Length: 362
Image 1: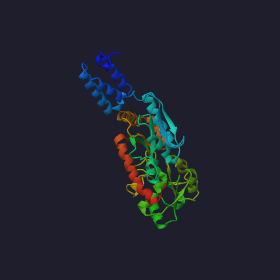
Image 2: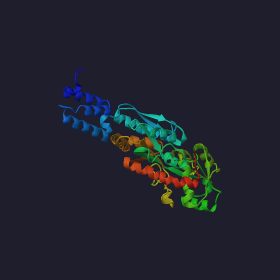
Image 3: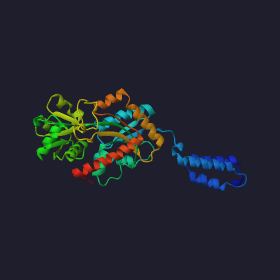
Image 4: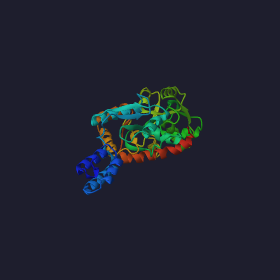
């Protein structure tokens, strides 16, 4: 058998290249060590070492261009919900830009934590992302045995939209402003109630934050959705409710309920004439529902930046704004770095409210 140490350098070089291309770096390294006999090019060793360093610093360099196949977008709520609609609006734009499908995967359950858990454990290759919402940052304080940390086990891509809730009261209360409602709530302790779409939701915690900031003791009445709560409100069986703008629009138009304010940090383009609770006397009050895209921790920066650029540019398109408005949302733009801070801050914001409301679950 021919002595491999005397084989032409180009044969040895090709062997090493094949090992490197298929990802067998250990074998390539052994080849480099074994073939340093007479006639072996030290320049080849230097080139190989440089290639290894390049791969270590930028793994994507050795991968195929992204995306080379469809990307899954996990949504923790059923088809037809606001989260699902928002996810589809942006998935369509991503698909148009990258020429690959961004497929919605409704992984329903556990207040969106089932979807989040699946994404946290997915390969950080850019082919699985989460449509995250405020439910995830609230859940970080409610659920004690989550298998992930929403603030640290993901790479934020972008925050794309938000949707304020509206504080709506029964006309029978005879109040016209937030200040008047606060005064009544403080006076009639434990006699006024408020409804929401369920315990632990952003509308529920809007009411709890209201209690925490005002010293009132509105009693929470959870519903399975908003419809029955609004009927009870209109018929005088409920004092107040926090609910999304599209849900209350018909009741407001008919004059069956009274809107006092929105729950966002600034006025909503959907109801620009309605003040915020913050500007009505409770500075800092902000319980908007937000939507954003998170990838598994370790997803290559180049992929994250590419997706973020498309998502943020989409918010400048009139058709995207119109589609969001139809679902009760509006653009709320935060890039990767801002999104990371936003998620961490939102977890911290909700923690004392959840504690105040005495909410916990396994």
